Image 1 (cartoon, rainbow, N blue to C red):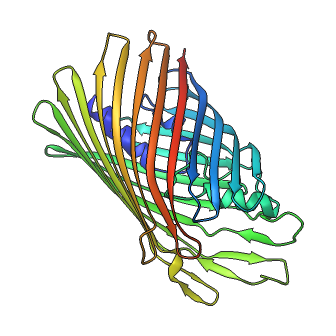
Image 2 (cartoon, helix red, strand yellow; image 1 turned 120 degrees about the vertical axis):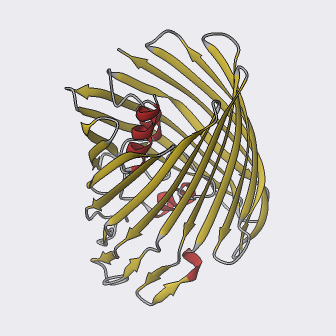
Image 3 (tube, rainbow, N blue to C red; image 1 turned 90 degrees about the horizontal axis):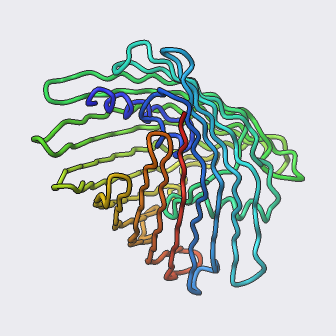
Length: 376
């Protein structure tokens, strides 16, 4: 069990693979065919102060995982999503449609030690948007609000990755690296501009170990670098470029068994350095998002468990206070035999958001999801 956990963590660190719903079903790497689907929604309502009245999103994910022989596995995932933005100044705007499809092949030449992956981003989603749709897309892309679908579509992409795990005394150490390429596409409807994203390189190191007989700690650190994005094809922005800043992600998980219950604490921090455009550095693109969450899973029976949770999130864009969110929620998990499981989650959030150009507003958030996993 310890070795299997180690490699699963490394595979998730490769990046560029299937959606989160797939990752939750991927611990087996895969020993059988499984389908994950359900419904997920998240929304925020804002008091007057920043111009935005509400942002809502719902999506229907579908993911399939399957083994292909003894050492090769495959997963594929897509979603149908809809997002609506309402402002105090005008009517609401909606963006709906399928997202891109992620197809990933996993190769395990040395099980519990070495994993390779090749992921394809198939451009089935809407990546060319009208001006009003672009406003909606920008609103759901916020790292602070963390919508389940932050991006509907881009161009064709490919990611290659490699992960390796090794014992080091009481510790399990994992290392992974990946490179991602996305092709050119047209982001603006009615315009000839084309956008060529830069290549992303990612490196991650992770470690975990047991603490006594009833606790475990997991640590991770990820660095992502990006080459220069290029815009071309229109007189307005022809020849412009943008080099995104380096991103650093630190994460920590602590798990402890307390009688029949399991207490888990997770924390992560994302720091994005300022990017550099054609006219020089852009300090407003710098940001830091910090998040912590505490959960207590308790079985009510052999098939049903509850998991109350509380969380806190802090957003600091550039050099000012951008927002704070406190949250509380509940997860119900039902296991109906070896082949079927259900997860039902509800969450309530309360906090505020501040923008230097528009002002400050209190906000209230709601989220709910129902996921079903069926295996064969």
